[in-house]
Image 1 (cartoon, rainbow, N blue to C red):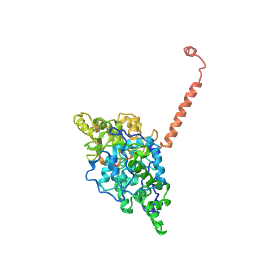
Image 2 (image 1 turned 90 degrees about the horizontal axis):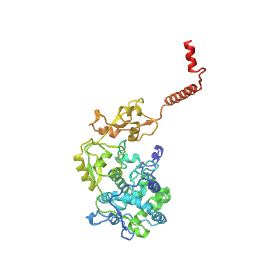
Image 3 (image 1 turned 30 degrees about the vertical axis):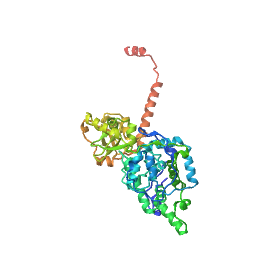
Image 4 (image 1 turned 30 degrees about the horizontal axis):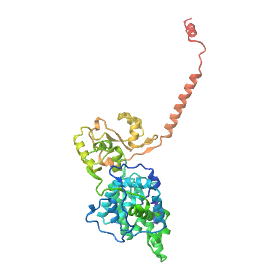
Length: 450
């Protein structure tokens, strides 16, 4: 797991973008992304071999019918062969359900990842790295707050232009996070000249790897991955062997009693430009997809409305992109039902805002992912339903890019006043119940008449 260094530690170790690995067992508990185009089929049995030099991109990447074969063809990182590789290969082999879930998710994204690797003349086994990082779940979040398929820490994501705000988190974006991860990996390879060390640095940080290399050099020892392994934390020491284990399984799944789903060697999705704000549910409806299927390709959108101008794209299965355009042309309703409101003071409670925007507190809380308790701090920008005055306005990009939601504890005075009022109310009721009439109503009436 990449460690997010404190400022003191960062001063001692060369600054390196930090990324964090999602634990495999945790990834198993994450929701399974829907699969509409991949069916299980045994993969051909191939020898576990890999050349030691990088290959040029294929002149005809479509010569293969299966993405797995395309990955095998581009293997070019030297193999590891040690006890840790065997241990992790056996771990995966003993968990066919985990492998089935992971490869089902991967089937949506692998064609794109492999294509990007080939464009950059990078080893295609790097396409398997999300097996280790997130089990190919783009909404995976580690205990260290690393997110997405490639498990970027927040700071590292910003270093690689991955936007993170109240409306979106590009660490989850299939396109943006893949581009950032491959850029980072290439940078690390250029730094170390060795893919195994580059992978160790992706996990541990380049400063830590540089320090370990310097220590071995000073002692007259080799500086390859296995020679540095004793200086690494356990996670990094196991990181490259895990990738090698998955590589071995992909190369020869039958050897491990596994089969891989057929992933056709053709794009699964295409990017569609959008011209205005659109509700996520509306986008899914126009594409004739379930909301879960839509989110599987567009997990970066965190709110019920997709904001941004023409540069914002949504991903759709190729067959559904045409349906989207046809349905959009015939859509006669508003595309978006949401706008933003900036909280100016603590007096703007969620209840008062719900009344102002003709909705319920529950709707506002759900749309903004707000906890059940607490008050909105002044300066927070939240989503609210559109009313007539804002019915035709899109959310400005500068507001969407800089929106922040801050929830603070309810003021102590407010809580105390509430408790006192409740206690007072309770005591009043209690006292009233103890009062007993000394005379009947009839008798009291007679006395007054007399």
